[in-house]
Image (cartoon, rainbow, N blue to C red; front, top):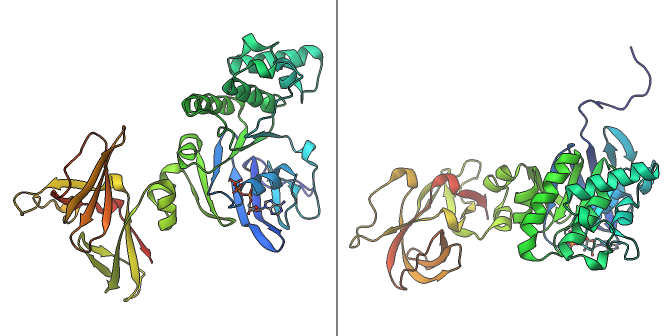
Length: 367
Ligand SMILES: Nc1ncnc2c1ncn2[C@@H]1O[C@H](COP(=O)(O)OP(=O)(O)OP(=O)(O)O)[C@@H](O)[C@H]1O
C-alpha cells in the first residue's frame, strides 16, 4: 500500500476546482459558498448580473483576493485555503481582462514574450507560433498603438497563453470590442483556447456570450451559484423565473394550485409538489408561443400536442430585423403577452388571434 502523501484522484481530477468559497466585504457576503470545477480543454462561464460576485470569485482564484473560507485545487492539488497559499505568480494561471493593457513601449513580439522563460530562440519560437495562431505574424515588430482594438485583443490573448498556463481566467474579455468584431474574435479565441488545452473560466454578464462560448455555465446571483450545467440544460431546465428571464423575455400566467393542478386559459398544468392554495406562475418564452388565426370566432382546430388555445387581441406589432415582436392583450385577464416570430409578421392592432404554448416549453414555479 502506498502511504506517501499523494494528491487525491489526480488522474481524474478537474484542472481547476474551487470548494465552498466564501468572501465578505464589511460583513456583507459577496461570494457565498461557491463551488465549481473546470476541466482541461473546457470553457466554464460564470454568468450573472453586475455586482453578483463574479469578478471577486476570479480574483480569489488568481490569488489577488483572499477568501474567508474554502479551498482551491489545481489538478487535485491544494493551492489555497485559509492557511496555505501558493502566491499568484506560481499558480500557472493566465489572466485576461477587459482592458487587456498591453505594454505600450514594447513591440508585439516583446509583449507576447513578456512572461516567457527560456533561451532567446525558445522564446522567439513560442512567440512566432502564437502570433501565427492569432493571424498576426505580420505585426510582430509593430507597437500596440499601431494595431486595431481587435488586433490588440488577440495580442493580449497570445501573451496570456504564451507561458502555457494550466488555467485561463478571463473577465469580460470581449466587452471592449466593437459588436461586429466580437463574434469572429470570440470564435477564434475559442478555437485557440481548445487548441492549447487550457481550462478556461470566463466571466460575463451576457447570456449570448455564455451560450456561444461555454461547455458549462454557472449561473450566479447574489454571490451564489444558483444553477450549473451545459448551456442547453441551463436554458431548457431553468431553476426559477429569474433564471428564465436572464436568457430571454418571459411571459407569465398566474394561477392557484387545486389538487396538484392549476387551471389556466391555456389549459390545466400539473403542479406536483405544490400544496393546494399555492400561488404559482406558468412561465414561457415569447418564441415558443404558437399563433393561430381566428376562424370566425371558432378558434384553431384542436391540436392536443400543442395545448389549449387562448383568445387574444393584437395590441401592436414591430419588425426587429431578425424577427417580429407581437404584443397581445389576453382576453382572460387583460394581461399583455409577447410573441416573437422569426419572419416578417405584422398583423394590424385589434385583430383577434389564438395563442398556444407547448407544455414542454412551460415552467411552473411557486410565486
Ligand atoms: N475590495 C472590495 N471592497 C469592498 N467591496 C467590494 C470589493 N470588491 C468588490 N466589492 C463589492 O462586491 C460586490 C461584487 O463585486 P464583483 O466585482 O465581484 O461583481 P461582478 O459580478 O463581477 O460585477 P461586475 O460585472 O459589475 O464587475 C459588489 O457589490 C462590489 O461593490
